[in-house]
Image (cartoon, helix red, strand yellow):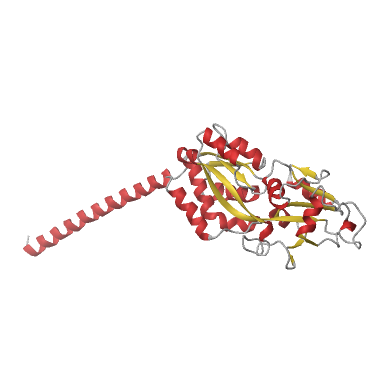
Length: 323
């Protein structure tokens, strides 16, 4: 065989060897990618309870997570109320998260310390405490902050609509709100009423859907709850615009902000994470990261104003460091 032909055969052999090596490396890389993909497929449960106000947002996030991220993980979201939820959260083998429409109380934090439960507060959105009346109520669509307080205070001196304005109906006002299990009640009582006695005749309910129904049937009623429950029931309710001193402000996603026009009735809402359970159960940490990364995406869909992006970035960083 001529030298030229020998060289050609030699080159072909080298090319074949390189091709075999590349195919081997490619196959190995593909197998590694498949293994990595398989390792991110999680199962198990994530258990969440607490605030009825935060419930629609967390339920939406849970649905999105189970459908698009981890179909083998069951995220169970309940709504016992903030205070009732903390009782389920701050026990051995408690819930993974507790949604809250107020900050954790000192006595609750003390229980966590006694039980060696490390908690992490994650602000999830901004909510506006909203006052609603019957859609046919054509006299109380605008009220001042002071009038709202006097309507709900036991010694506020307002029992009839005509006590506010002689041109208003001479009818008894029926007040409604969420019961003491809810952080919304506590926020209202502590921050708006400044711990004054709530009117003893106030009809307090566990379920927000019940409050919506009651107001939709009572032309002389007025109730308070989170903005999201008003937004999703605008056909049955009318929101009261509040005058904080510079003219009436309608609650909306544009006015609900800590420095916005509706600021006096704006509050942050939270979820609290059991850090130890997040370290022990991969699906809990994975869901927490999903919440942090997508919270602003779904906040407005469920009646909440979004958080500043820098706050969200801080939560993501904290959770990433738990891995």
